[in-house]
Length: 388
Image 1 (cartoon, one colour):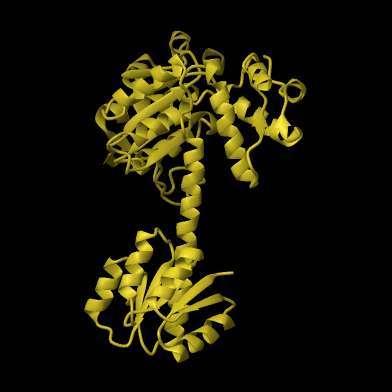
Image 2: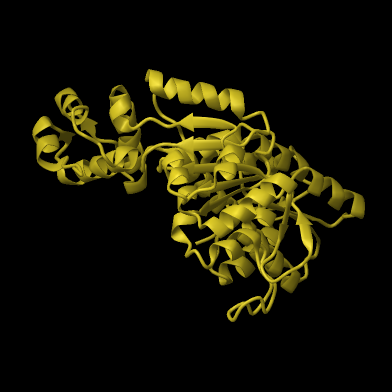
């Protein structure tokens, strides 16, 4: 249930607003001045704060500024009987969601509160999403093999060079692409990802370059492709070894000329895209067997980053397990489980053909099936890995 704080030095106004908002099933707290409001903000989390501007001790603008200093995400709706355009502009500059004059129109008040609640929800969801992305996008490891990868990222990311990322399935090629983008001058622009293996060959060109309405039977409207979506940012072509030869030819042209043409279209569209590509295949062998264009390979492989398998960095397993235990505990809302040193040593001896992805799955299985601590016996019983 949404939680709203009313801040006003007039009891009658607080009572009226409380009655209106409680009728809408909102939970309401009250503060008679700015100091009391700050005390409540320190103790509680609010979705919206309805705050009078003219108050004794501490006015509404000071409350707003203090709340922002405290890192509060509550949306502030400033209220005043002495409002002006200048006051509204000042409040907005300081971070207020909106400004309402007294006496407030009931419909306007309720609409503003609902919109502020929507924004508050969006801010919260964005924070959660960023936290989840942050959890999955950290490159963990201090082994020599991983330090070489991190060193290469630090050197290459600030440039505009195209990067080919090689490595087995589940080793973390996508993380490398995200890290490269995040440390580049394009970090504020989109990173658009395409899994070339997951898209049927007859649709890959439409996915990459878009199509015009009527270009084929199911093209009922114009579609913007991934190259256009990524313009100004980065395009990550995952599993590029599975891309059809016809699509490879068009990707090569896009890289050479910085232009694309939508399927069924004639107009050339300029694109400004940095491209990262990744594959678990041996592209030189694919070239020899006629399944991959050599000229495209040379365009993509200005820099090659080789991501090690987990077997090549077994010394990183304790750090990875610790990270996964914390992540899983966060997901389940529990304290992270402990793991016995012998169990960790056992995990380091296993043939992780599925690499990091497989290790994460095994750690989650151990968390679910073990007792208070993950023991050697738990690891031996439940840490089965794929053996191909």
